[in-house]
Amino acid sequence: MPRKKRPPKSVQKSGNNTLRIIGGKWRSRKLSFMSAPNLRPTPDRVRETLFNWLQNSIADTRCLDLFAGSGALGLEALSRGASEVIFIEKHRAAAQQLEKNLALLNATNSVIHHDAKHYLLEETKPFDIIFLDPPFRQGLLPIVIDLIKEKKLLKNNTLIYLEHEIEANYDWQNWHLEVIKETKAGQVKSYLLKYTMHID
Image (cartoon, rainbow, N blue to C red; front, side, top):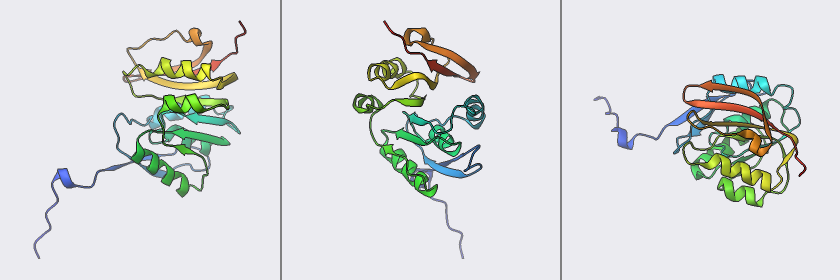
């Protein structure tokens, strides 16, 4: 019997990628995520560093994964004891895949298929931890931090983890954010920041 030819690349099944949960109750579980524009999950090594930073702060927290993508950060937070994670993802297929992954894990947390800025305009309840990993070089980071503050979504001592392109520089004090930890990997800078309420 002649061997079947492989279909040309243009018609091969579009690849699902795999991420691994590093620690907590779902440790070593592997989950698929969709390929999507600007979707670049935080690498294992960086996530491990981040959650070492957060290990004494994650339990029973309400978290926001604002540019969720694969959901790697929010899923890791849930695995390690966060009580609630709201996942915001505007790419429909990526949001649907994230919903499937949460169902596989029997997790009931919300995936909202929405643009990050529009979501922030509608949210009213503050968070304990916020993950911000927006698409690079689109000027989104200061816009969303301004909105988060304007909508009073920060508590005193809310933690914000964020990533941005290496060439960008921000004065975090402009938002009353204190640098707790920072690291650099390749072309990405990562920060753990703490918000302190400021009374004018």
